[in-house]
Length: 474
Image 1 (cartoon, one colour):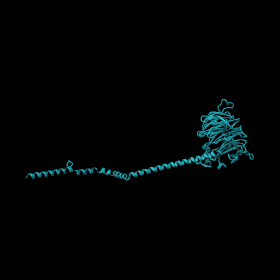
Image 2: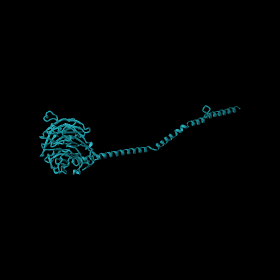
Image 3: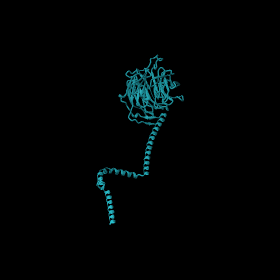
Image 4: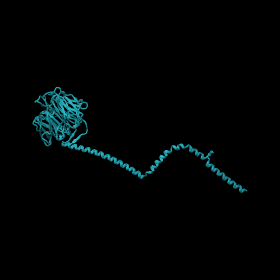
């Protein structure tokens, strides 16, 4: 009886213990089951799960993609990108080097041709006749302009006149920057400047020195920037009629009516030597980079090439009258003009002109008694096929531009720019962008007659081109 009672109590206790365990699993302590709470939580969080479902899938896809690329594949991909980048940089470098090599080769070829005197840039066909409204006149001299030079940077023009003055002009504005006034005859001792007609000028290729020569047998050296007087060279026995600096140096060549050529070292302020050969007054002189110069001999009708180092000269004949002006086209070719009205192109390899145009600027006078207009000035755009000539002494004078044929054989007229008076000087700018004409009422070498309608001054003639590219022939 007692044992049965004890066993029943044990079983009842075990049953209660099992009920407690089941209750603890299904009850949250507030009389609600965990199943109910779980269902409620799921209902509340269903919206947030929908919002995050898409990003989670994308993230999972990205992770899958990253997992798909192995380290070896990644290294290979990066290596290929690096090689492609290197190949692209090498191609760009090779292209740039090829372009620079072509430029250098072209420049070297031009330098070689220039030294040989065979360089000829064909740009005449690109020139357009200027609009008369675009031609500017600069006035400031009281008497006829006799000579002019353009600074190497093409910013300034220096002009000289029979009034013994030198004027520095600014090209862009056309304004006078400085004037070196001329002095009266007899004031040489106290006046800083010229006291006689100035017939010639020259400027160094680096713009360091400006030289001017007058009828008082003097050569004066100036600082082009400040127009300050530096030196005076004495030695000629007559009028100084031609001046030229050797390109790339400060060696100065001078020509005179005393029939001599003198060589000066401007850096050392010293005389070097004298050359003789002409039989009449020397009317013009020019030189480029070689150690030589060319001169026109006036009434002796000769052109001479002076080889300074060899102390020798070459003599050329061809004009029927006086040769009044000369200009080098390149190291081997030159152009001359004279009072017989003709212009001629010469080469140092032949004693006669390779090309001549007679009565280049027409003639004047009664029928049967016609006389050609004098050619008072010539100019050449260096190493090109363009030259210019200026006539003198009439109401309808003009600056005529010419095209040289291939190999400088033949001259064809391009266009003319009318202007009254004596065209005493012509100069092209180094770039060929403009041409400057020095005009006066009288000829620079004398007073044979006067054109009263003419204006003493400078005409700046713009030279426009249709195409900027240039063709070079050998």
